[in-house]
Image (cartoon, rainbow, N blue to C red; front, side, top):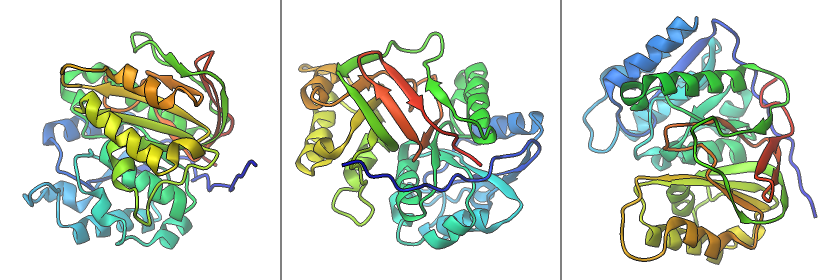
Length: 316
């Protein structure tokens, strides 16, 4: 039986609007952040750095204490002048914030929220607890601003188009030069997009913030993970009923995979996901090409044709 809950489409980001930059997880490279913010300003936007971005406290894994990171995030949502919020980077730490946020206030002050990697914890929480469409997309502190600035600009332009345009998004295609998309399991899947980083999805299992995937298309991607650990994470999802309940799977890139004897990432994916409509190689996540995906939007995945179509607009 199909189930659909109407999601809140945040107001579109307007040209020249204010964009808040937050550090909800780890600290970020200040050179990369400056380049990302400078590019936003060149494009005509007013950039509002969060207070943790200004000081980036040396507190172990994190940009600041959990309480301060939660306050920064809530301040950005509750500031009526902020038109969108983009994370500076991932790293580690967003799970600490999940029981410290006011999800009703976030719902009442909806706006585009962007990030990936560790930010997956927040993307899922805002989807499920604030009923808000969120955006799995590039971050302002991405090291690409140092390593491949021209591609970083293209990734940012794609993001801004998605969160500024109140028109149905349509087909999501890999850009020229990106990996070739492969079919892992045949079939057609329909449902809202959900998910993100595989490690975070697995880590949320058994908590009140566990991802709910019934009749949804699940995105997974990761970085620095050997195939045996990907197998472990997928086995955990399998045992938890996630794979059975999902409508289908979009597998992004698995980058910087350590070379070890044994099955490849592709072989692991085929073992675990071939009974579901699934594709592998969509250019999203930790690779050079970072497409923006609207999490919570209705989509159709034609795995045999390797096509992903977003059926609606992501912003209002």
